[in-house]
Amino acid sequence: MTFGKSLTLTEKDLGSSRADEVTRLDKERPAFIEKLRSGDENAFEEMVMRYSGDVYAMLYRLTSNSEEAADLTQETFLKALGAIRNFRGDASLRTWLFRIAINESRNRNRWWKRRRRDATLSLDAAIGNSELTVSETISDPSETAEDATIRRERENALEAALLELPEVYREAVILRDVESLSYEDAAAALGTTLGTVKSRIARGREELKKRLKGF
Amino acid sequence: MVNDMLCSEVQNRLAEEDLTAEVKAHIAVCGVCGEEYEVLNAMCLELSTLRRPAAPAGLNMAIIDAVRTENARARGRIIPISTSAREWFTFKFFPYAAGAIASVIVCIALLASLNAPPSDLAVRNDRTIFIPGAPAAVDPYALTPEEYAKSRLLFASESPSINPQGAIVALSRSLVRGEMTDDEVVVVADVFGNGLAKIATIVERPRDPGTMAAFERAIESGMSEAPFVPAEMENRPEIVRVVFRYQQVNVHIRQSDRRRS
Ligand SMILES: [Zn+2]
Image (cartoon, each protein chain N blue to C red):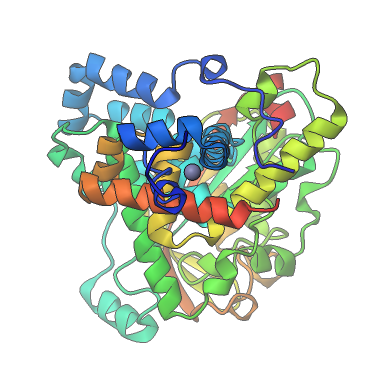
């Protein structure tokens, strides 16, 4: 079976990406950013409500551990609390939070490696409760139960292959292809150059494709 | 006719987004490279439609709580540990507790309407413990101290586990049964190896003085209803000083949210 054969979705079906929507909201609300920077607690809580789901989902992709992702999400916002006064608005809030989250995750990883306990990190890789996929919410009356099973299996394979990627490639592919960040935002979130992020994404995709071969 | 570029050379560049005119011309006429390109495209599309992991229920609340505690600390409302105590503390538990005050947050979520599904019982985010207060189909308090401590091993050095059969949980249950209003108590307390605790400082008193008295009784109750699990159950230090924030919140959960969890 060829990977992607029974895929019936097109970009059109998916509508405008969530990332674009969020970026747009930020840009429309300079007053909100100003409140955040001045230490307004209500504004900060609103930011938590708006972005914690995104930050959590991204961290879950990186760690494949729901408790770890939840803990890192909390740490991300606590770090953001200390740094919000210096938020310059070069990137969107979401991108800025992603950058903090990725740093937190990398630091945690190093800590775990030092403690030689990295095995624990993948303990609940298979659990993680999930909402419906975009493809599931767009109902396809022609899809049989068998099709759905195949699609689910392929999703699982894709997720497993993502986890096998070296960290730098995984981060880049998650930001660009899963979270739909622009190249520029992905570079900002990873704290690297456009050129580096482009080559990591390309390399990551190739690795991913190789790992899925034969599925 | 296939243009001059070698297939291997083209395939090395297919994953890039800005394909050159030369590569595009090649894949338009080369069946092998064209198919490779399709497979990559399909994979990228699938990545963008992967099912989205849902954050655990209560995560927002836990974060907001942590943020409020941090803000309160920054404003100096939470009394820091005295210098001598801190030195001893750091020395004794280094590196586990260096620089950090552990915290325990208990929220009683009074779930409106329906019975709490069993999955709600496990909702916890490291230092935050949620106790669903509604009458549940399954008894949420049937958890043993061992089971609960085991589920939080990663965080035990930072925050001790509440004894699910102890006085604090019992207090939560009794509050839920009565008429409950949103209220909050914040204390600094020492948690000892045997699971008992002693309040060092009251940081924030609840509006209802009765709640304060009941809370003090619960946290300083005796061995038969020890508020925390024993230290050896979770390899935590013999004495841990914690900021203990006890919060009552009414949480209304919509039917649609519940079905998802
Ligand atoms: Zn070719």
